[in-house]
Image (cartoon, rainbow, N blue to C red; front, side):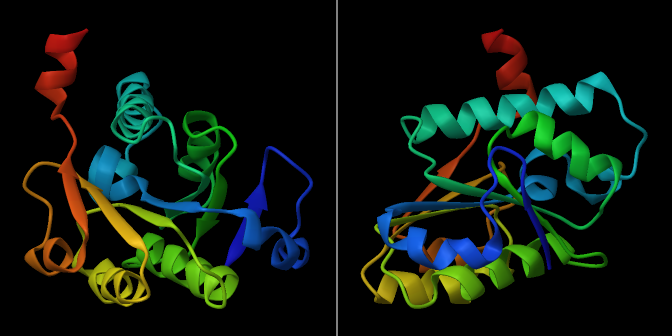
Length: 178
């Protein structure tokens, strides 16, 4: 897993000492929330970037801007990875190439950096059932697990494992609110 933090000079090896201070961790599967796999492959276009920014604003509004340590996962490097750094400023970026790469990268990051720590709130920005076992594990450990998902994409397994689930507005709702 490749990790870079565009907002600071914190290296992976430095994280062990800093993790005890973090009460909220947000895992954002941007492909699931913002654009879907097929749209991730499209050339850069302003509508896709706008949608990613809208998703970040929705996440901030739904959590009272309490996203804590935010990690954004992707299945691709290159342009989509760089777009994420623009659309999710200050977030740690992780990726693994291939099918379910974003999920694997995010879950690997969580296991690698937080396994031995207590997290007050775990926010999962995805509806993918791949996150269900992790949600159940952290909830059993006493963590509040908040799932934020697209309409129609929240798996029943993840819904059952979460402490709370919220569906973000659809594109037409964003357009109506603008």
